[in-house]
Image (tube, rainbow, N blue to C red; front, top):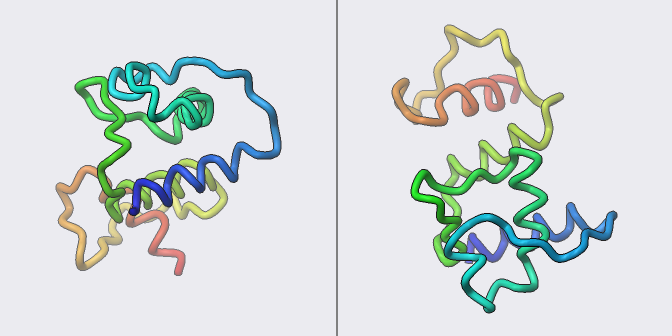
Length: 111
């Protein structure tokens, strides 16, 4: 359900411009006709650095989006929401060694 929400968000963001169909560059999306409708949006968001997929070259479109993944997407989409001077601020529910701790700190320290 969350991945569907992410895909819908990506499509809404891309609705302002027409993108010709291209391959997304993720082996689990490119080889699956089930995702033909979303390939161009996934590819564009990947080119922009918003969606990067997983280290094994997959996108995993059937997996739910985690709070950390969503936070990182918002962080990358809206740079004006960041508070980069928060080196000492930590978010209580995010371990300091979490892969998205910086993004959580820079976004949630402003709220």
